[in-house]
Image 1 (cartoon, rainbow, N blue to C red):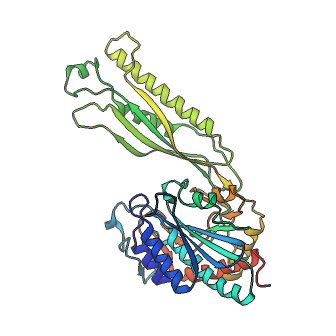
Image 2: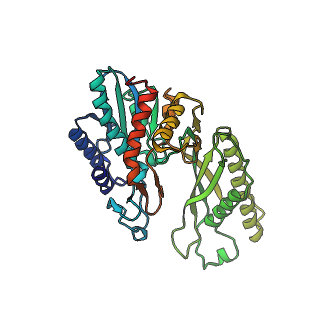
Image 3: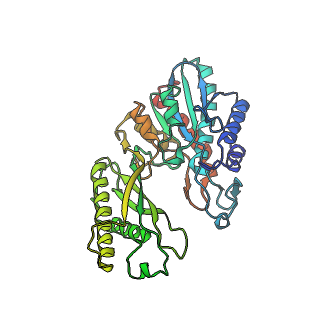
Length: 406
């Protein structure tokens, strides 16, 4: 398992940068080694970004594991204690370090070896069932990709009476918050910063400073603290300016500026209300800035130099299953039995593709897997001892929930 995971980490698969097919090929090679069946499935025109569906057993699918093989990028490799694409073990902490170590390649390794054990037991018991593992692409683009989980579901290639998304941690994650990502674009007017026209404000409008005022206003706004008992310590969160761009040259008043706004939605959050409030804030500030330029230039006309537009880039809903669902019970029972701890059963803050599975009628644990940390951060890691323990837990969950091997 360690050798396999190390290989997966060394194969770069940064979403939108590196083709995932090399990771997919390594997974297929491991399946050949373990004598597990697999299918390589690509959306049309996406042959360099294939999904891999691994199957243990024959017959109808009773359970589904899902993990994504793409990762986020690494901003500064020099900040890492070990190379981020080295797949190396810190012997002192017994942690494997690397981008994707726990998000999501470590969980994929655990699930694959769980299928290996299940295949042996299914053969022994001569059961007419199958268990699937979907290793999917493009999750990190915003958990709304049409070429990964969505494509496999639409083609009816994956199914199950229950599912686990193999994210790290022993929390039995019964759901996730929703996601709304917006682009705010402000258009202004170019003029030379040394010109008399700009000095007297007869011409020019600074798109960058108008955008900055909008972002600060969004950050300062007292957003409603939507709450839900399945999401303790989590509320609606609006984070403006996660990416900011603007301007073209140091001596030119910028005529364009743009920024991304990341919004995490609770089940009760009204998306329409949030959008309307953001539009109101942007409109008011643009109007104020246009009035400022008219006043400074002693211009009595009603012409406008600034405008703003808002575009939805990503949107997906919050999703949960009941905390008393039999799948949740099977997970809790397995953790108590094997790890000797009682896990929490909460929803998580980051969104993932669990909502697609839940909407398709597949009860889903939206995150459970090996112990790890620093997801999307420096020195992302997964605990070496937890890998084998997670296989034991996964095996017990499937056995219990699907009433196998009685």
